[in-house]
Length: 430
Image (cartoon, rainbow, N blue to C red):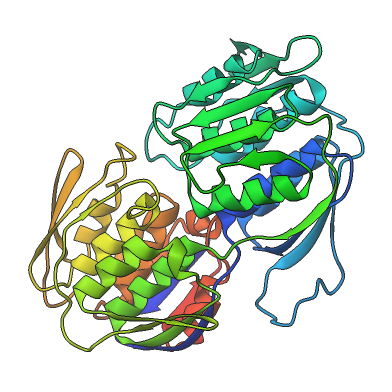
């Protein structure tokens, strides 16, 4: 099993290109099920989750090809992929394909909308909390679907003639439920209103893609989405937005190690809450024409409390990275996790570096120390794995991070990008 070895002590300086967002690429790929025509996606990252979703879509009859050249001027730019689904050949998403990735469950929306039936295994993914699919099911039931749970599968059937528009209020602004209901509603009869919808940039990216495909959607970028169903959708071509979580992760790595890095392609408006906190920590953030420049002052960072929130708040997917940043800050920082109930598993691993962290319930208290020491550590989930790499970048001696298959699900060419800016990092393949 692969691992990553890091020897700490080097500053980061240079340019890091930001990949397309995994959390946008996956639902955009799933949207290809909604049309018989070609959907072209540009800036698709090469990630384990993307490769797994390709297998799932292939199973449904989607033909996926990489467009030769793809208009790529940057060798680190994402791929341009063509998706063609003239006919859905199978409405079942089996356990062996769905169990490793939660987002694959979202195929239930397009399958139900276009074929009026779907049988989808209950999902898997990172073990960071229960993340139930109740919101998905209740939303689809509101659109008229009849749903049963049968031997670990969600079996859904639309009424004769297809789904019917409805008023749907989400108990919390769930990203997955918003994606799924939004896609299903594009082909429903009548008007669907999603209240308390998620408004992350990835939701906007998908909604704008659906509009390009002929969907009628208003309220994009707000908590209320209104969808007037259409009979069919056509082909389109769209860019995957830059990955704000990758950008925030690298920004924190620069803040942790010192240095000066341009995050090429990063968009400040997608990351404002996290950048505001970094500035409060003492990091200089400058918006430039081609991205965001992050410059560490060289002084010890100031400890600042953070409460995790849905967009536009501080993202839960940067919580582990920020906790790592605070392990060497001057003072004490409290971090409150409000999204997932089991997302402090990295605390025990950070303690192996010598970090002083106390957690009780959903609040972690981090007391900054002068130095971390390299250690053998193990990734527990996608974002926790990269937080351990960040700790290793400043820890004295060598750090080895195992179980990095988590990391490969969401970070494209991490070692290459960090290494190009001066990090002493390498992948060890056994």
